Length: 549
Image (tube, rainbow, N blue to C red):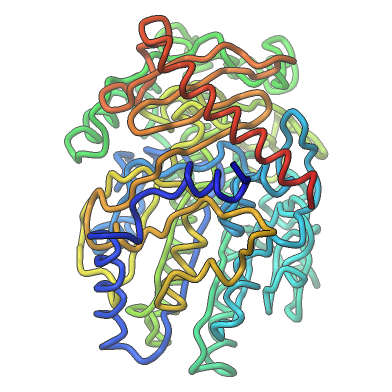
């Protein structure tokens, strides 16, 4: 079977045909009857935010602006990232799996620059008259300007000096003065929103009748744990009961909200990223309050409990501030009269991180926790809580690493308010969704031919009208030896972190066990073989596709 035919067979589900196809056309036709201007698109990305951190996904962190978007829009309960920052950003802006376009490594594929046939979303939107703007994190090959953004501010590499939210000097700028010049002090989350708002104002002035795509990519709450003191103070006593209590509270709330129906996963007390600082290094470099494993809260010393509770308070403060800045961007949309006609998408690039490392100019143990002189990471205890109720963390392809909150808000195009969508979906679905919104029809064919690989994503437009309307035949993952594939409710996962060879498969039925605690591999060996064959076929096809281009 030819590569293009194979990918269509494996990836293209029911969207766009039959009853689902009518949902697509009816939804967009209804929108076009009442709107003469194409919709704008605002894509907001958090970094290392856990699935359950926001209030509207079961958390206790104050997120009134995300709550409002969820209450007047949709929340997807089974939306997936790749489990890591750079492949996720490649997926969400190209519509391809990262290995398809050389943006993540695997056996037979070395990470590098995208092929010419994999443009980013701004280039695909230009034929429909869109102006595109970027503010914040980049972490994609090339530069924003070369990728089609008309304006860009942020970091074309990693940003924040790899380790600073306060007054970092490594920002690239495009026709705007970067914060930090002439002695200006700033906090990057605020600065990213400032530039987003500046772009919106400029767009309103120069292109009032033209639609826009704004990509706002926050660093929060990625390490290091840096927050303004006034934000930290709001959560000073919020986490003294510890991560075990918080996990239970979130899980019960999530079940009541209908977000999940699975058991609460066990804590992985012996699994952390293999590059983490060792326990003795953590004590030496950070202090006696640090904890290197997701152990029972009651087993910690009083000093550790105080230290860990403060770390989570900083994590919460970072998300609280990001939500406030999202609110400022929304206020600007309302001032411009564009809020109703803007499709807003919110996601996190991966699950919360169990990493514990120190970068840049190090960590000052004497400095106030959360200040610019410190370098603290959330760590596996609180990462496990942030990813409630799922298993493992960022970097892994288990549910804790790849499950993302996903909020969709578009008053002019979505009638449903406050509803959940349980359709399994992925970052690869964002490009076909946005292109359909921009063009009023399926538009990927303009960027594909028999000589280019088929984009595996599906438009989520049908799900805007009805739960269960988008059906992937398969979803596929691979990152640093970790692997997964989902077909229907069956999922193969493998924990290959730090291993030279792929680890054995684990089999789970996500219908009742999305926490991946009941491995059915021995009970259903034929199902393991079937899914393994599909996983390897995709991998081989990706390798062949790159070799021929």
